[in-house]
Amino acid sequence: MSTDDIVKAYPHAAILTGAGDVVTAFNDPALLLFPYLKAQDPLSFAIRDPEILTAVGETGRDGQLRKLEILERLPVERAFAVSVASVRSGGILLVFDDQTASRNLERMRVDFVANASHELRTPLASLLGFVETLKGSARNDAKARDTFLGIMETQARRMARLIDDLLSLSRIELNAHVRPTAMVDLETVLRQMTDAMKPLAEERRVELSIQTEVRRPTVMGDRDELLRVFENLIENAIKYGQSGGRVDIRLEEGLPGQLIASVRDYGPGVRPEHLPRLTERFYRVDVAASRDAGGTGLGLAIVKHIVARHRGRLEIESKPGEGSTFRIILRCAEPAPAAGAG
Ligand code: ADP
Image (cartoon, rainbow, N blue to C red; front, side, top):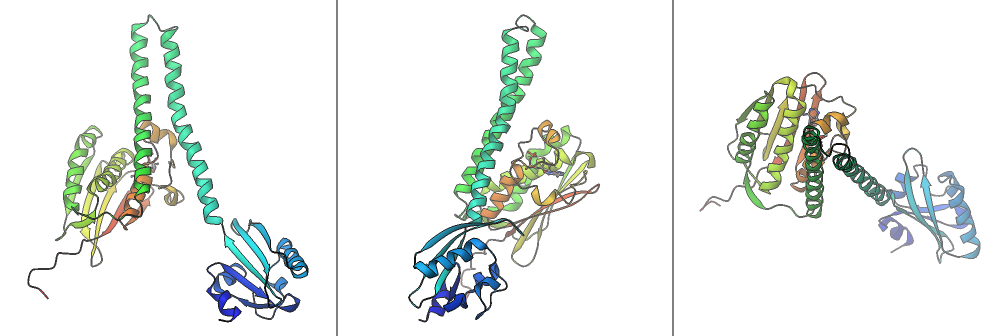
């Protein structure tokens, strides 16, 4: 194997230079990072970062291995661990280990803990406030006591719901790589959830309709998780699309081997700039409206994770003023081979 082949086989971006810091070999990931890389050109034509170039010069002189952390801000923020090593042929090998994903993950984790704590602290502060009032000025005021206890109950329920959602999210994430294997009748799941949502729909004066037109409604999945998906979608459609007065639930066949389950409302819809962010944890278009509706901001994040675990797809289509359609696309379960076939 030549040194060129070794460089090409590297999973990370790698560049090899020869005498006079001329590029002698590089691989595809390196070309993605440094589009101006060209064999026989000086390294500095492709790499501008002075820190890297200085390290290459120093390693060329003393033969010592150098490790750098490079943070690029433009066009998008990226972080690399770069190692600069001298090789026996006299050249320098540069290897770029992209750490952007793990750094982003770390940041998401920090944000998530901060958001979750904030979401819990707000109702908790209100609970403590009312406890103080009940112990003090409202001690002997029966009417105020009833009002305050009602509010306290709402806040406590909200905290409980938030904790339930957080726990389901982490349970789903824990199993993200395990594909569910039970045979689930999607039509039954949809009908069951539609029935369960009837009281909420009636209370909000929303007409729920369900239409299914598939021959084989079976998918490989986790029944409880799929129920959660449609619970969230139908509940959202009723809550946020209430003004449309109608929610349509539908199961149909898509491309061969695909089932499409959709929940459509005729409410205010969602402006396009919010669409890509709807499934982020704690993202809400209107925080106050979501809180009033008893939302945690985690429903669609849970939906997204369940669908991903089922190797399915979630599509959201919405036009302001015309309502929204949330579509779940799943693969049909393979039919059991008919006896005697073959
Ligand atoms: P929650 O409902 O608890 O706030 P979700 O993750 O279920 O959290 O939804 C996130 C946000 O997406 C909601 O706060 C709302 O702003 C928006 N949204 C979800 N479904 C709809 C819908 N059918 N119509 C309009 N907006 C919606």
